[in-house]
Amino acid sequence: MSTSPVEQSVEVSAAVLKFLATPLHKSFVGGGWVEAEDNQTFDVVDPGSAEKIATVTSFKKADVDKAVGVADHAFQKSGWAKMQVAERAACLHRIADAVETRKADFAAVESLDCGKIYNQALGDVQNFIDTFRYFADLSQAVNYRQVIAVKNHEAWVSRKPWGPCGFIIPWNFPFLLAGWGLAPALAAGNTCVLKPAEDTPLSSLYLCRIIQELDLLPEGVLNVVTGLGETAGAAISQNPKFRRMSFTGSPEVGRMVAEAAGRNLIPVKCELGGKGAAVIFNDVDIQQTAEKLVQAITFHSGQVCCDATRWLIQSDIYDDFVGECVTRMKSVQVGYQMDSKAQMGPVVSSKQRTRVLSYLKKGVADGADLLLEGGEAHVPGKKGFYVKPALLAGSLNNVAAREEIFGPVAFLAPFSSEEDGVRLANDTEYGLGNSVWSKDLQRCARVAEAFVAGNGWINAHNVVVHGVPYGGVGKSGMGGGVVSPDTLNDYLRPISVVRPL
Ligand code: NAD
Image 1 (tube, rainbow, N blue to C red):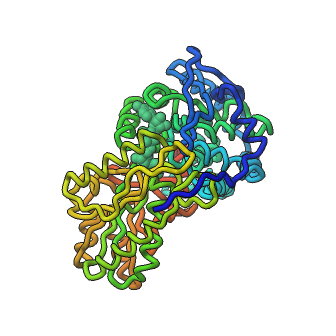
Image 2: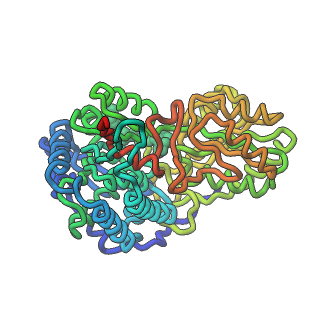
Image 3: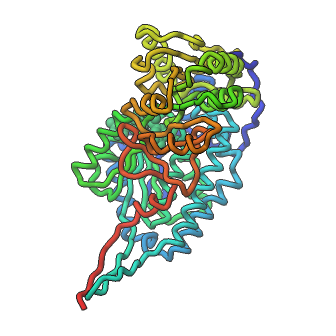
């Protein structure tokens, strides 16, 4: 591992600087900017420099409840729910257009806010645009009145929007995940209240600013409320006016949100953590496979829910594969996220850095071998939250092999046969994304289908494509996935209409 010299090669536009200079970033409710009743705020920090970049209003329950009331009112009165589908789709395309023409600005805001390498942030912004366009187009192909042929009855299923929908999202992909949540709900005619993570609220507030400036949505259709998880987040999860709830984040909080929504009998979608495996057979190209896995685990500093964090390697290539991974991991350039030479930026916060480092210690204490030491990294001139990538190996019963670390750390272990590889991959409480690596595509298909997970990838990892359902099972999620036709359907309320003949 090496660190790059301090250099900010990505220029931040005047528009972004003006946005960041806003003295207080208020929440966006009913088309306007609203402060918390108690005037409380919290600070947002650039993870790469550890410097404050914004002050944001801290909503409490009463503020959140008002915002949900506004979304409910907009559902009844704004005309959004009853708008022609094509007209609504055009609104979504206009939002995508507006983001597209400001792509660099959104990427800069996202990069500074969550410490994501600027080019990776650009990819997230493109994904947001694609998601809005995908659901805008898909909404026009839905059969909103599906006739069912049954004996002696006339029958059909009509599909309507549900009402106000709540979204709570994490800090690792703030803008991309806002898109995954909002686009299908809006395309279906619902209204939304989104609470971004307190570490990374800026890109969704920037979106609201553009929506307001260009008058892209009726007032109250999209509301973004900022606040802490235990106050604003809890208030979202407990509000009985919502008709759908969507939570993305840790299993611990997901359980609380699901419990609260369950008490109100509100259907909830949970996209949670992961402990993905890569099952690597002895016929792979060792260099190429090692390269791809190292890229995956260092992408966004390993803060990716579906990452391969357990690398299971067929015994006869184990030593060669480990050697290749160690060499490649050592050469990853850690640096400031806006420095174009940096390959891996900081983790999101000092708390997250402590978490990553403590898992290395706990893993070693629990008997793991340290193949690549990891530890704190120092980027000259920057006081941010940097860590070095690390590799552990040993028994998969190790705490670092079982629990989600959420950093650039992989745990390596050998396996003997196909059966053994599948068994080890499935020996986890999580079930989000696993991959299989081999030249034998029949074996790949067999193994991918044998995974007990939402996603099985072949000769690649972290492959999320619009149109293909993405979700988790077990501790990784429940209630349906995202980015597919099923998702749009989740945001449409079915009513069966029947007339005996
Ligand atoms: P987190 O669970 O701590 O926080 C997620 C969100 O929940 C934040 O907005 C937070 O403010 C809010 N929150 C916190 N306490 C709350 C409470 N008591 N009630 C309601 N809301 C509350 O997760 P995180 O640390 O921000 O994100 C990392 C986690 O997210 C990892 O486990 C990761 O795997 C998971 N994740 C999953 C997916 C997926 O698609 N499956 C995608 C991204 C991240």
